[in-house]
Length: 136
Length: 130
Image (cartoon, rainbow over all chains, first blue to last red; front, side, top):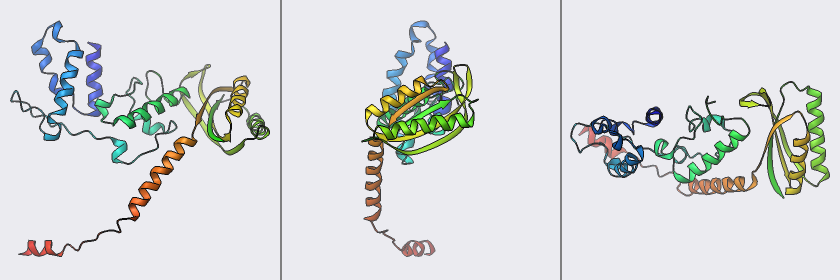
């Protein structure tokens, strides 16, 4: 349950990515459906499909979610230097709990996420970012 | 020779003279072992993201040094021994800098090659009026 709430807050910051799957959950209702591990691969495949198209939920009729295409902030703004000293930049990719926000929520590309995560870890080491709790 | 960046945090109640003394000893240590201090910066007092040795704030210092790994080993040993230093981090920056320079060069070259293809958009306006 706690896991569920956390993902919902995280998606608020990034985009409404998780929302479409939310209505499915109560209808499924029961324990066996709940493990989010089951949802996730499904969503990954789902994302690849409708992403270029635009309107996310054509199937099942009534969904009108527009899934905005996520883009890598570093590629778009041509930020090459991801430095551990740049707390303001790194703070955008750290959740309230202090966790590194996953790529699937922020849309950062793999090479940049790699640099980003190492920079965040360095910043944590020198007490610029928290390991847990209270972001910046 | 490699370039390193040493960031260290001093306890917030450290006197100014003591800070200067510590810094000058570090710099002399760098010079004696064949390195060079490229820059030194006081980043000022900052709130720590978490408690370190019961301190909530710290004085951040940034020392950029050119030298070998042995020098860094010595500097880190000194920082570890020095009591007012509550935390430190050494990062090698020359490779990263090289990478950035390369990217910058490529970008500059790309910017120069297409000399602004300015097309007069007169036909478009004519179509609108017609």
